[in-house]
Image (tube, rainbow, N blue to C red; front, top):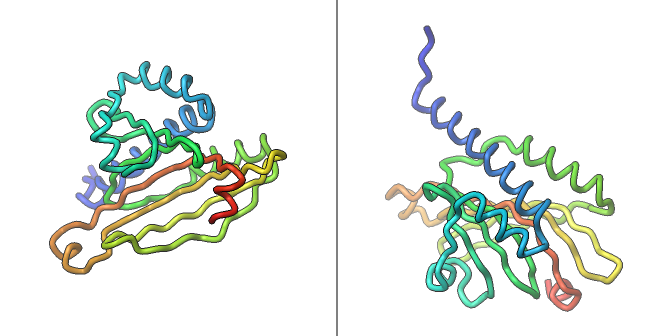
Length: 185
């Protein structure tokens, strides 16, 4: 009988969570969104708890948004309002893992809708946090933009990392941007 090491168990748990997050993203952000009411209805079936305005402000600052915490606190779902109308699934993990399942779901969406092309990877420091994003984008006939992103962020300050802040926050994002906002970026 083979026993899994703690590292193997951690990787298996991270892969399972990644698979669950991919399925959640597909149902909420690729199928229900951009219909905000459909997102809300779907999250009610998941017994998600809507976050208070104070809780939303912690993550979104002054950006207009709503958020929901899923049962047992393993993930949150966010809907941001224009000029960046977006749906995202977010969770903490010790490692990113293989994105094959996410890539398959997104490839199906992109094939069905057409016109997507890669965006330049985005890397920036926001205080002690490093943010990295990859994804695809298309311009719609009304000159709005639609994008699909994977964003990962982690503490980059060496002292904080040495003190144990080594986790990663992952976001799968589906975003529509108004023309004025798209030209500003």
